[in-house]
Image (cartoon, rainbow, N blue to C red; front, top):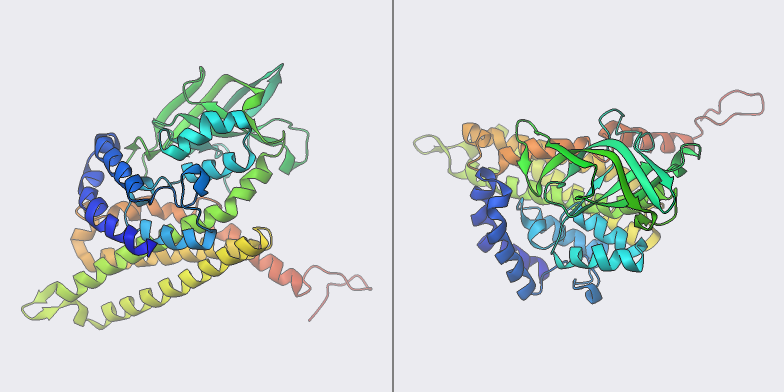
Length: 399
């Protein structure tokens, strides 16, 4: 079984490398990671999400969801199999909508793992919860776009070969048709990587980082635009549904690893001679609650993955919102309890728990904060129940 093969590879190769990942710059690990990626290809595990004709395993979304949960158990799992964000989303975007030239120049080396990429959308001056509100402009100048703007939390920009930037190409169009997605090589004059942003005190490096970027009159050919002008938001929405499945199953993989660590700690850590932590009823309750929440969350995500595969992301939009906030909450609770059970050890980088707690707290913020998704789902439920409809006398409908 594929998941069993992948877990065995992680346990033998990835887990032993994690102490170095937690304490050294990512760039210091690149030679060893390259060796392991070559081993992944040799074992036939490379790029499980991509079609076979592009070097992948051709898994369906529900099948990949199961794999993503296993890979999530290590902070370098997805990277080793070349299905790490943001590369996976950019691969899928270019495969579906890239021109022949774009595929040859960017998609194919990305699929082979020869380069990395990033996606520049969020801007520090505007609320990320409103994805159509941005200031970065791409103004047409003959056969070129001139891009000016300010982006941040551009994950993995440090060391990337190119970014796909969301920029307003028609400020007078309808809100959802103002922006386009444009490929910008990272070495283009005027593109400045200002800094890797410290996340709870840790700036990271290379792939394991989030950058602040400035576009200062950056000139790129119009042929670098992906899809039609003004289609940027539609393309972003298209990659959002499968991307949400990827993230949620990765989160559940993290939760599963943290849970196993918590159980082991509770079963072996002595409070006094012969008295282990797991004998405390509160710990037993945490273990039971975590198991129930994780199992329920996994079933919910797999159900949404099946609906996306069968009916498309639009038909599954409520489920996509539900899993975003629900699984992020489960992850946070499991990590918090695991750290509590580990005591002072849980606060250190002697285990991956503190790393995940720092970097995955953002799960409740990025791709839309919890509150936005809860509100969107609740409004549609209430609208279906009649809220907002008017009766013949002009009053609101009542149940």
